[in-house]
Structure formats: structure tokens, C-alpha cells
Amino acid sequence: MIRSFGLEKGKNIDFSLFLSQIMKDIRLGIVVLDREGRIQGISRIGCEWLGVEREEVENLTVEDAFPGFGYEHFLNRSILDGITVQDQAVSWRNGEIRYDFVVDSFVLHGLKGEILYGCYTFKNVSNLRGLEQKIERSDRLAMIGQIAAGTAHEIRNPLTSINGFLQMMGKTLEEKGMSKEKQFTDIMLREIKRINELVGEFLLLSRQKEVQYRLVDIDEVFNGILPIVESEALLHGIDVRIHKEDDSFLLVGDSELLKQVLLNISKNGIEAMGKGGVLTIELKKEEEGIEISISDTGTGIPPYLLDKIFDPFFTTKEEGTGLGLPVCHKIIHEMGGTIRVSSKGYGATFYLTFPH
Ligand SMILES: Nc1ncnc2c1ncn2[C@@H]1O[C@H](COP(=O)(O)OP(=O)(O)OP(=O)(O)O)[C@@H](O)[C@H]1O
Ligand SMILES: [Mg+2]
Image (cartoon, rainbow, N blue to C red; front, side, top):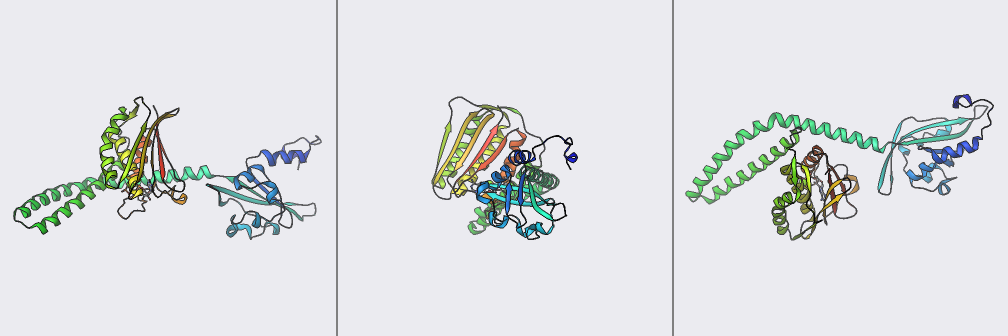
């Protein structure tokens, strides 16, 4: 037994010290139960992840100490009857933080083979899950990209001629005083514009590494988008505030794409506010690069949607396509930047960082 730990036989080892060090320092959640199913020990990191103090949970059953901790999966198959689990995925929310654990269990036998203790170990794999989701997302983006590349032009070409003929028709109808019919052509033209925009977004998603890398003056980008953002804001009684440090900021990227990113995110902010509110755009120089933050005082994003909003086609809006943020995500990553969002209670802030 001792050999299996790689320890020399006969060497005087204080096992209780060894065990208490393990419980204190190991980066693994460990919960030890006695034969009554009461918690007799829990590792320090386990307490931290589960959000409890050791003294609080000692002598409680797992069920009482951690209500909801994966019972439906495995806990009612009692470990104390010798039924153990391997690689069981369990999610746990500790306040604002969501953890994903992989849980194993085993039992410790006495000399006569009787069960003395049950033990659960759980490893925090939250980062791995995030990675997995990112890969899934970019796989999906690539797939949409392939479909888009194949069909976008085929859709656009006929649209261009329909658009042209409709405009001519509209003019004729107007000349003939058929104003009602003219309205129909206007509606059709608007709808065609919408399809064109959608196809444009598809094409953006499909383009691989087509960013035009140039030195971009952010002031220029801001001056390009502000009139559009402000007029949209004015329509909804929204105040736009710009904060920036005095110096001028330069970054390497594509100014047209950057404008699109800022417009998409500002538009989302305005849409989240409805009537009235404040949209704040802030520009800062941070150690890791240039940070642009865009905050609104709108509805906010509930925590369970935070990791969905960058998925293609995810939308909560009747008229939304759900492509705004995935397009932003792709553009920013191609420029070597990052995007993250924070939303607590109400309002949302999107933080974009770009290398200098
Ligand atoms: N500032 C924000 N406040 C609240 N919710 C937001 C905000 N920004 C994005 N969201 C949520 O994220 C979803 C996805 O946004 P995204 O821009 O990708 O698509 P959309 O705005 O719904 O449609 P589209 O941009 O294509 O018109 C939105 O439907 C909304 O639920
Ligand atoms: Mg949007």
C-alpha cells in the first residue's frame, strides 16, 4: 500500500499530516463521508468552488450541505452501498460563477472488506467547457461561411435585377398617379434591402482572413460612426456620451470593419434601451492594448444568456437575425483583439481590446 504511493517502506511518514496537507493544497475537490453519509472532510479548494466553509458542512449529509449537487445523476445511488461513479458531469452555481465539474467516487474498505468511508472527488473543468464551446462556435461559423460563400452571390445577382426593375416600375407608377401601388414597390424594395444586408453579413462570416491591415486612427473611425449612432439615438431619446483620453489612438486593423463592429454593438445597446437612456462609449489605453467599452442602460443580459449571445442566429428580437455579435466576434478576433461582455442586473457593457 505504502509502495503504491512511491514511498519507501519503513520510512517514518506522518500520514495524518500528509492527508491534511493534501486536503489543504490539492487542486481537487474532495469530500469524505462516513458510513452514515455525513461529511467528515472536505478539501480547501472544494469549499472554495462550492462556496462553503468547512465547519458549516461537517457532519451534514451531502444532500443537506449541497442541495441540488447532481442528485438526479448519481447521489441516490448510494456510494455507501459501494456503488461508485466515474466521470460524471455536474454543474454548480456559486453566486455569479458557474462551475462545471467532473465527479468520481470511490469507497475505502476496512481490513475485513467493510466500507469505512465514501469519497467524492471533483475536478473543475469550467475552462475546458468554455474552450469546447468556442470550438463548437467557430465550427458552426465555418459551416455557415461555407454555405454563405456558395449561395450569397447566387442570391445577390437576381436581387440586383429585381431591384433595378422595381425602381423603374415604382417611377412609372408614380408618374401615373398610382400611389397605392407605388407604396407596394417601396415595401418590396425595403425587403430586398433587408435580404441584401443579410447576405452581406453571411459573406462577412464566410470571408477568411480578408482584413485589410492598416494603421487606423480611432478618432477617424469614431467620426465616421458617430453621426449614424447619434441620429439613431436621437430617434429613441437616448443620450450618447463619449469619453476618451486626450491622445490620439492608433491600432492596426481594418477601419471599415471596425466601424461595423462599433455600429453593431451600439445598435444593440440602443435597441436594448427602447425609449430614453444613456449610451456611453469609452476609449482607454490599457497595458494590454486599446480598450473600447460600450455601455448602455437597457434591459441587460440575464446570466444564462451570456454565453449564447455570440452564437450565430441567437436572437431575442422579433426582427433580429442574430448575426450582429458573431460578425463582431469574428472581425475582432481576426484583428487580434478580444471581446467580452458584462451585465449585472441592468444595462450591459461590451469591452473590446485591440493590441497597440
Ligand atoms: N446591449 C445589449 N443589451 C441586452 N441584450 C443584448 C445586448 N446586446 C446583445 N444582446 C442580446 O444578444 C442577442 C444577439 O445579438 P446580435 O447583435 O447578435 O443579434 P440581434 O441584435 O438579435 O440581431 P441583428 O444584430 O442581426 O439585428 C440579442 O438578440 C439580445 O438578446
Ligand atoms: Mg444586433
